[in-house]
Image 1 (cartoon, each protein chain N blue to C red):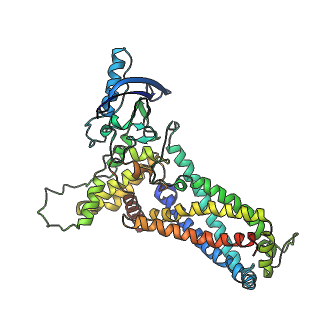
Image 2 (image 1 turned 90 degrees about the vertical axis):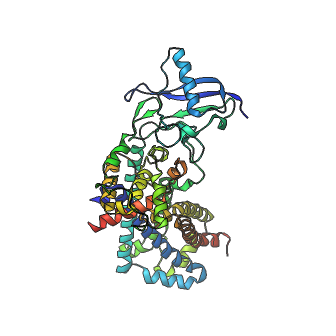
Image 3 (image 1 turned 120 degrees about the horizontal axis):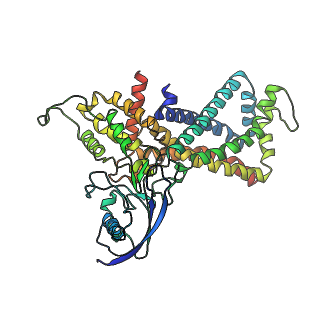
Length: 251
Length: 222
């Protein structure tokens, strides 16, 4: 049933990367429970603009959970409390009338705040650039069953490939570790014939980049898996560890 | 050196030293349980291990394992705190699957270490150390009298309770540590993750029950 609720928003405001930020409290009335979380923030921004105040900067793009652009740490969880959804898939029906909602940016040394709720997730792009690709053109789609791939490997690779690189794993991790992201990107290629050839070099290059960028050391708390909007499993981290360690022992 | 420079290398050291220490605990607890079954047998073990060169070399390797495990733990935790950034979340909650112990390994490790110091003072200092140095301090025992010595210490109920608390902290540390070590060396996948966790719980429970049986045995005054 649609109804309107009034909420109090406690939002992190920070004018720029070097400026000290702080929380500001906003009251927003008559929010439809059918509206999405980001639509609610749009409403707030309209209100701020009409009052000639600076609107809140936050990242968003496709608003259908596939681009990985939206972020936000909502009431203690990246992408909100719901499992396997992104912030743009979160709806106001999950909140009750009079609730205070705390919204923070991702907090990780490798993801510096650009403005308000926006962080620079370029670190993930740099990790991809270090080796998250196949370096030669492997041609078009091969004939079916020309290269046999087990169902298990195909499924695992597809699961890993569903990672949208939003950064929720590093944001949720108490160690600020990007292992789930790197593991997904290494796994999706290492499991398939085109990517297998460079698997060892890729694992070494991407892990080296990850360490260089100041991400932390994984301690297997599983917070990343629990908060991942795509439900990526930590079994991929075990695969990354295997790939990395066997590559290092071969050297 | 990739064992220091790379995050997975550092974790490998943590997991290998951790597994080594768990194996030591299994060995240690198997010997200790003998004190309940047969005090004469326990005395024989104490006399046999005593301070011969194999036991001393073993102790040195063991101490090395502890030191490496602790130093790496401090280094990793320091790096992880830096990676988290300067500003902390105002509101932060965990999902149910996240074990409390997995987030508090350093705290649990510190508790374990604190009691370990007491334990070394209680037993090692008065048994192997005395035999090594030849310095007989007050209350020291001959190695062949191990069972009487254990009985004397645990005749104080405060020591029984202190040891039980210590072992409880160690249980929490091990339940996360064992499966985490296997995950770090890559011995895990979707099918094995729940199994590895069960194995981890079984190993830690066996070790801790064997240890805990001793203070409990003396506490209830058998």
